[in-house]
Length: 256
Image (tube, rainbow, N blue to C red):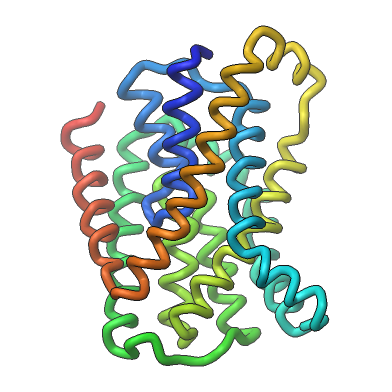
């Protein structure tokens, strides 16, 4: 892995991990388009640790508030929302992995993300930010959406936020719940993949590349969180929906 590949991968991961356009789908397309070598599993883990750090910093106040006030109902909702993705990862890993080498399938899933984002935009415009707090029913629905987002091209943030809005959550509540839910999801993914015994060998001679990729993933992750909240407040989710539809169509008809 070259420094250029590490820099591009870090920026793409940071931007697309939180913007509703699918980080996994974009990494598949970027690596295929530029002919980048597939990064090792340890580098992938490092990028996810960086974006996890971005979420913890951005939502630090909410995390501290949950701990201090011992809001057990929210912890229950987060647990309920996490279960579907865990089960999907355990039982459908091979089928999910097959999507990572097929740009045609990524194109279809990107277009599906676009349609869901337009549905979320409709909920934003109808309710204009009004709605309820999280509940067992809405957290379960968001959890199912997060499970679908294991497929490359299906945006985790786009699916969970849109599903939250369609389930009746307020805009801010859907945004907060989506990304607090990402903490156990990303942590679980990191622990599941594990730090291989070849980690030291992978970093040896590539420390600068790893550091650059992680730093850029962290910084762009913070920026993308801020951008997404700005878009949600102004009810412009359709911008990302249109982008996913166009990119998905390009994957189907032009990118081989």
